[in-house]
Amino acid sequence: MRLPIIISAALLLSVGLNVPVMSQTSMEMLQSPTNNNLNFRRLKFNRHLWNQQNISNYRYTFSNGCFCIPDARGPVIIEVRNGQTTSITSVATGLPVDGQFFQQYNTIPKLFNVIQDAINRRAYSLNVQYDARLGYPTQIDIDYNAQIADEELYLTIENFEEIK
Image (cartoon, rainbow, N blue to C red; front, side, top):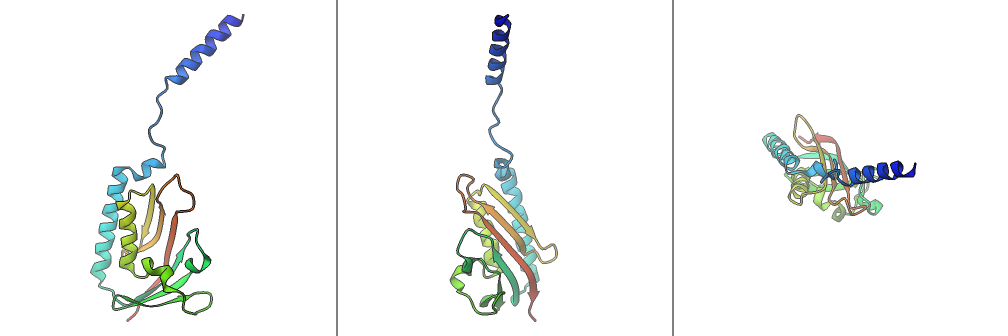
């Protein structure tokens, strides 16, 4: 009576050990070469669309959902004149903030550079949403390494406004 149970268990165990293991999880496939190429093509298209607008005076609200100090998160209003950042102010207080915290994100071209860097570094996960009309990024979510906690970036760009 026990012999058939033992034989059945042995067969199940041997079948289980011979099942091929997936080499990538679905999350790892997010940054497969195909998706990396897609992210690059989308970046190239939207950067070109943005450059065609020839907008050099604008403002936007920026938030950084990082695991960092509150002063570096925002939301802040970033104002750019002639392609150069002229002010960064807190949405909550209306007062200027330390620009060092937002140096990488204080113009639209710099935001495109953040995306390019994630592609170049083959980030584990990259999800970008772009404005359909002007091409600038509206949401940038990056997880550089699945094995490291709290190094992700969640950047939000909203209330974009061209200044005449």
